[in-house]
Length: 69
Image (cartoon, rainbow, N blue to C red):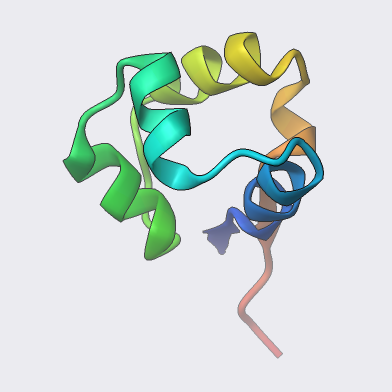
């Protein structure tokens, strides 16, 4: 199983926001943003901050992908 944040990047486009603006608005670190860009695991606190700023739910910014098969 793996996480995928493609929904987050699409949502940013819809809201006319770039990654730097997201990082500034949420207060997340550049390291956390880089992990999101590589579809790596991040702390739940990071995801909650993003959801608060974008006024969305967790399932609006990420999905879990079954890598088997």
